[in-house]
Image (cartoon, rainbow, N blue to C red; front, side):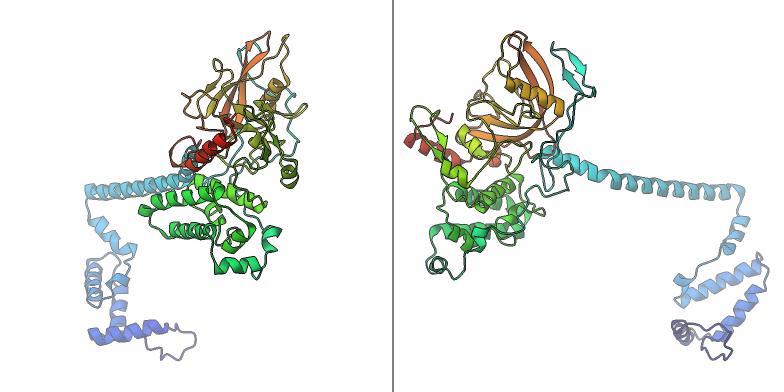
Length: 511
């Protein structure tokens, strides 16, 4: 055996360079030449496989390799272990086999446990985020009607497919069933025309650079707070999130915003403005994402009026029934409530009056509690106001809601809308009014609040002659929590303050 590679025979094995180098180093350290080592190996190969001399020589050879620092590279063959097993007694061999069996069983159990953990963990996280409402987590999904519903007599029955139910072909603004299909708060691919048309060299833009007004300073502070949140440690995030909430809410109703101020502050830019809060990769609290997206959407439309009654022409002080939406505002900012799902609304969005919900396309009736269309596919939205307090129940995620009173055993159109919702399974937008009983914990302090999508899953008749129906609605899964308490509560302190100020000057009571 020649580790130097000097053999001239082309067919002989040529050891790699690293083996030859290692052999030379080993030779120098141990004083054993390659020829001597080769001779010993040949002698070993000629010894009886399981003889005592073989075992002795292998042990000596292994000890020698250990001294040379090469023991860790030597892998004994199975044959080297056979004599030990052969010499061992039956009890010892059985004990060794049992130990091997237990070791293999333990490894198999650990692998199965790891596989189970890897398979189940994403589902557990998704279920937790669905319950808690964490969205980036999370996106909205529509829940199909329950198989359990009630017949006209109030008795339970299983709702089966009889061919009368049909898929709604009406275009829907509802969020997709798959939570990862699209972003819950989509960022516009192109900035609005009014935004891009403002040149940085415009005289008003240059004036803002020379003398910065308070509103521009506050918007810069808002952006700075976003960056602080992104870079902060978890121990400081709670305080920074509270500060950011104040900035966003003040920008919504207190700052005298102009297009030039928004352009100067780059508030709509995805890399530096409001989209940083609600982007798909955002880790901000769900209420902050919702409120910043609401502001972003309004500004993108070019609606900069911070008045909570913007677009409303008020009539008599003692009554709000004479109020109406300005035709000029409606022409500039058209909105319709004829759609199923959430649309551009956000969880917790708030309005001072019901007419304002019509203005923004959340509800379609300035006074009625149920909104739908004849020959439609169900109700678009309902308002919980406690009109039928003895029949209605509000448990937050579960609602028992009464239709309107009919006559001569004939349901009203509004009741028929909800009956159709039970049939089609289309989600219904639910708004809560301050007119709910004060003991109701979900009642907004003032005005009206959007609390998400619900599905009608059952109904029973409470008065046959008046065709009074009591519906059961369940909140769709995957939505943020109802914003009736805590730091995410709506209306905010700033909205309540603006409400009270207008109530004294305009005279409305929130109806």
